[in-house]
Length: 358
Image (cartoon, rainbow, N blue to C red; front, side, top):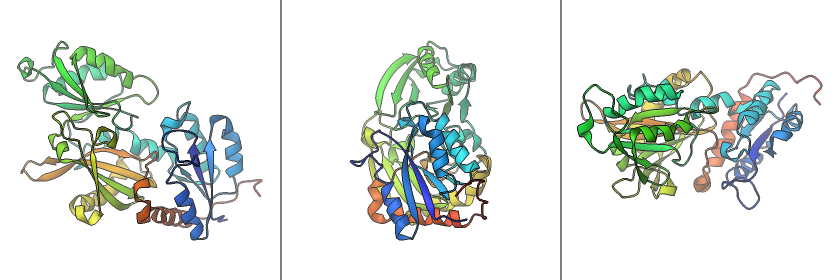
């Protein structure tokens, strides 16, 4: 039975909320759904409300839309994802399913896509301190690197690492742990100098604990020309954001917080990248576990040169846990999201009513 009702999940607090306590881009989607004859309800999630939320949603809604920034969950995302999985077990369509959010949102998605055209083969993931200690001094010996923690945001825990004195580099050998390195964090482009061993000890915090890991990839100097972000709704590119880092010798961060300048373009102005990405999207989905693409998500790319000296694009990361689009509500993105929600729900095979539902 189709209810034509959608449940939106939010978390209380955080810097992404407006005066009414909701995200600025949640209510516009709700209103857009209502203009199309559908209904929607927004609930705040708390771990202690898990059972009540599940019972409230069962038999009343066709789908849920997650608008929760994991950083706003006091006890982490494990219980929240459990709740979303149970909602899908009860017949709700997940937008997005937690498995899809984890597969697309984790930084090691890059390593799983090494054989694609978008990720260099010298990209590594470290799930243990031992792996990190064994490989990173070798990869850094080959040139400047970027380390990315798994679940960071706005550049936190993303470090550009540069060897100050290349005379210590011996071809084919790992760097000594006493090597001095220049470390620049993307969150604000601040610079620190450390011996390699001390810096690696500091970075162990990103590996230990739940979902801990580090991705190690080549630094791409053309980041100074800007990062290119595709904003996607399902499989449809909505617009392209060109994010140029602030001027400065050490600037490489493309976040607004660090002073980057954003330019918003139509996808057709970046047709070379967009067409190639859409062509490979089925293969990307398969490599990341075969999940449906998230409802609202982004793919970030950096320019590089191929072996012929032509432009190519390197994937930096996906974002999908709670992508915002408040700066472009005037362009009707909320209507596109609402239409995609309706399309996805209506394309499902009929789901039997759970036993005991009204």
